[in-house]
Image (cartoon, rainbow, N blue to C red; front, side, top):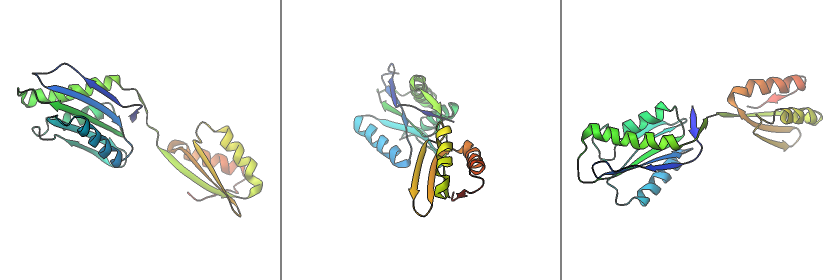
Length: 197
């Protein structure tokens, strides 16, 4: 899966006097989707249709034809996102009706083209799922744990320590490296680590 690095917008030539403006937007949650859709509606108060599709990790996917014939706008937008294997993304195509009907086939092409065109501008990167690894240990193991965190700083994205009777450390790392880090910690600390999660 991939995510977009930055939001992009594209507007091409008019199609039978209708304007189509495509947006590709990075989103992390449902609130962000709602907010960005509201912003686009405010930016284009005179538009005829604001059609969209989104894919969000843990929430699935949705699309809206916003009054266009069923399946003529949101679905082709969604297909372009799936074709690029994107997640955490909102694609919006704004239409200003120009007075001439395009037919369902014409709408599918126009909405799809607005999204495929903006996708050509977007920079993508691999989507990495992160997990939290939390563990406890005695103070005499502090330097060994610190050494692991330093040696693997490329995958230990975020490290936090809590100091009570023991030290509790929380590390954010890519899910694919969880077992590797757990094993490295256990080996270095002779099995004296207690994993909380």
